[in-house]
Length: 276
Image (cartoon, rainbow, N blue to C red; front, side):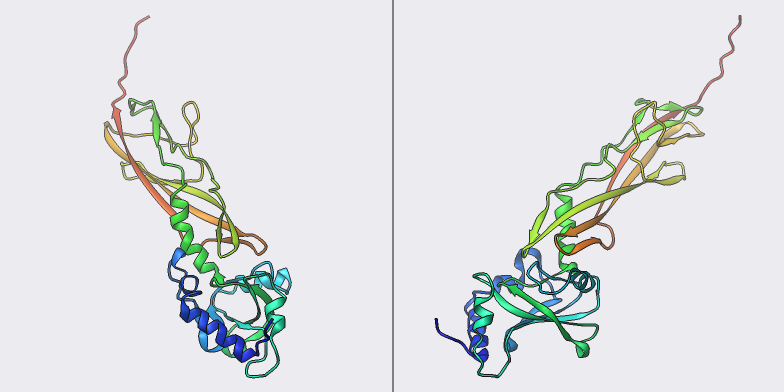
């Protein structure tokens, strides 16, 4: 096996990038462009900002992995595990990791001027992954599996001004779509909804329960005047995701929003006198 100096190894990597071997993964085309991560050919490294998700091959502690992932504004980089500009062979960087990967030194800091090494990783051709990149993938992924919003009410033909209408969303209180893999990281998701009911008479309410058919009264509303009301329900889904070997995180913002409208006819309750 031919030994490569550090500068020689860097040149080989640069040549691979220019030849197209690394291009698709550096651009992360499968998951959308990620401006927070880039390849730096001049130093054979990856550089970026944001919550970095370190792989299972990371030599440091699990506490360090979680801290790095939780630092949204921090700076990090991967560099080839050898002394740049020296003539020392980098055989260790080639042979100490599984086939198809290389040994990288991991640098991390609150600012670019405070970067310090925190360990090493074996890494292949794909971009290192950040939490921002995972969360950008969540929206489209969850939409494929989110349960349909199927609202209904009892009595199904409408009600009277004296009798509450019982509503339901037809959805569960949570769901877990299949796990997916992003650049070697296994990601599992749990999504939970809250529902906003706008009754059509000026009143509205937020609920954390989906509602059930009569005789349940989890979600009930009494209309005071006869009319046909447009009752709208909006499901707002938020998610937590777990990156295997790293930790569980809350996704920022809403993941999915769904809205449906029901036409609810209400008639006047009439008093009938009955003689005995």
